[in-house]
Length: 276
Picture (cartoon, rainbow, N blue to C red):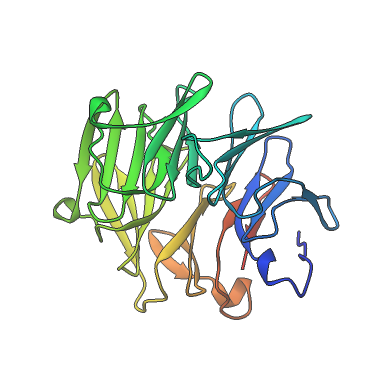
């Protein structure tokens, strides 16, 4: 399946792709707002903030939209609700969202704070919660509970019930700057990093590294397809798939040439949606 966004609009560049439980494809854009694929084209979902950074769906069927500098928006079948992490005229934007195994929603803000939803409000974690920071970059649910958090300088951290476990380059991490995280249905945690041409899998506390011979920029987007295969894309335009324990370049087979790839989204019908 393929849909084309409106031509001639530089701000319509896709930033994130997401398929909800009803099979609808949502597209967040750099500055053209939130779009919904209708089978032939895209309908705009009117939001006050038009710069979309991340999307996720909770178990109640609400779509959560993280925006740049405009907080969180919850999209329900008949309602839109703006939620902010802090009061004031300039709420922190959201760059990464997920829901953990206990149904708690988590977010990483543009300023690098780790936050979770507690009842009707969002709260940034602090030292009282066992979170001392560095700046966070992305978040994904941990299969055993809690969340894995990528950071911009100190590698990967697992937060669970107020305790933090850190994994760094000394533990086998390719780089201290984690750019993308993904938890698969099988329980593996996959990650991309800033300064490496590698995708890594964390399984049973051990890292396995899948490398390409050439650097195409950091891996910034990860997706797992219906068959369990993991896809990775770089901002430099490379699309790769982990196949038989190797990282295989699929760019020319899929796109014909290199494009700057922003989001990936794999859907249950076997499709892989690519934003570039």
